[in-house]
Image: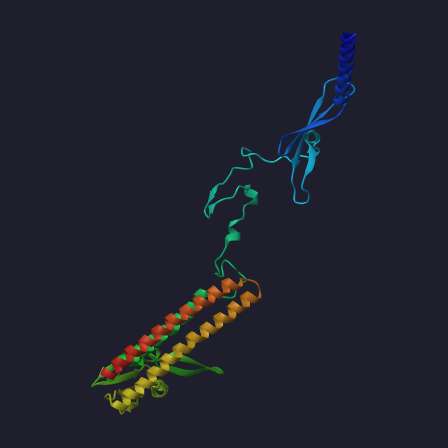
Length: 319
């Protein structure tokens, strides 16, 4: 009887165990595989075997944990744009140019040489008013005129030199206006007995020649010669302290005229640069660069005038 009870209890326990197993198979058992992955076990009625579904868990700024199904990525509807590969015909990679390496763009996208134009010369920018070459040429001519005049003045100071009258001009009436003509067109100049001898081609021009020499600011007094109507004698006075001081004043006046001409050219250039900036022909930075070039050019030619004045002054005082 005792044996019968034990076998009955064993059968009952086995049935209960099967029932527990069947009930457990319907439940979802979850095991953590990794810190960011969760493995869930699910049973289905269609199959006796459990199916596994892998879910990924990640953290975001807004939520401490979010879940998404990796299988959902298979149904991606985002269109894919076709792009040119490295071997495409229109993309040759970085090609060297005269300006350096070229970016990986087609030739049609590359900027032309005109886009890199930085010169501010008038032939490159037709609308630009500023012309550095013209300004520099104006200053150069002013210095050359000053050098020629002072050299002639100082070189002939105290000496009978025909070159002393090279800058003398005659003012003649031409219709309703008056024009200036060089003295050499109407007479020749020679030296005799430490004096200049001026011989006119036409005796009727003697009065005009005499007036031109007298008003030339050379401190010379021409004299007519008795018995010779077409000849003038111009005595060259010996240098004195007063004459040297007067000549220094003349040098100062001539050099100052050259400086004024240089400053006028600089003022004109500044107005041109300002006009170009206002009309958007050049940018502000480019205009500043041009202004600095003009200032440097002005300083260069003004320095030459100062050096010329000191040189001529020393020669004049030593004569």
